[in-house]
Image (cartoon, rainbow, N blue to C red):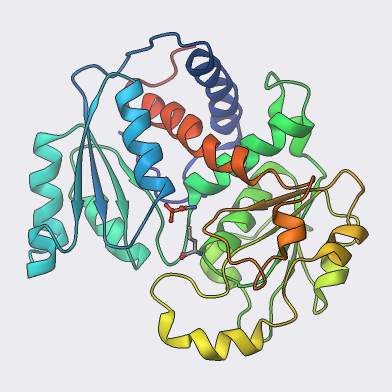
Length: 314
Ligand code: CP
Ligand code: NVA
């Protein structure tokens, strides 16, 4: 049994498989072809933080694969009345086939997985957001690749500029770059840097998989993809005011896009705040692929659930 708790849980060949499989599964959806490999399977979703995309993409995706979904939040379950995560895992995993959790510390997710009889997927923690990076990479490959038969070749040597907080998304980008042969240019305000030890654990990352820039313009120079995220992630709201001041120069605007490659794409995991981390002219402009990126959450997660439950089917 496999879990998907962080991006580094899978190897490059598994990502090659998942990107190709996502294209097939998305093709079936687009041509209204019924595909029900997960009939009689149940996905439990546990949300300890808010969500729009993760909730809808997992629920719609599981339904399209023929399965059903149970949705729990902290406030409407016994988790909110201090039932332990271990007991919750033991119980839920006897009744369902796969579990997706959005929570605070990665350690809480890991504890759930330890006591679960079924595969567990990280739907976002304070530290990582692997399903989002899976969708972002698939979106890049769709826009810039030559099909998915050799999806990894399309990523190799590319430059992704990360402008903003050294948060769960940034940590996950680092893991992906280390594994899949591209480089992340990181520019974060001082005091909000990524924690490389957290991203790479005890491993030595691949040389050149990331570079740090003080100036966000320098990070964007020559990038194939420019991406950012909210200044204040869920759970950090008390820091809102301090962050507004610290992040003022980390807004992806037309000038930053102008120094990236002319064919650079713009991505944002959403929700976005126009005028804060991104200018409206960028997110609503011609280089932005944020709506494809959001839709692709559903397609990649269908491939992921199929893989975790049935293994390689093609
Ligand atoms: N990008 C993302 O995970 O969105 P939600 O918070 O709406 O699920
Ligand atoms: N970094 C953001 C991502 C939201 C999808 C957060 O954790 O709130």
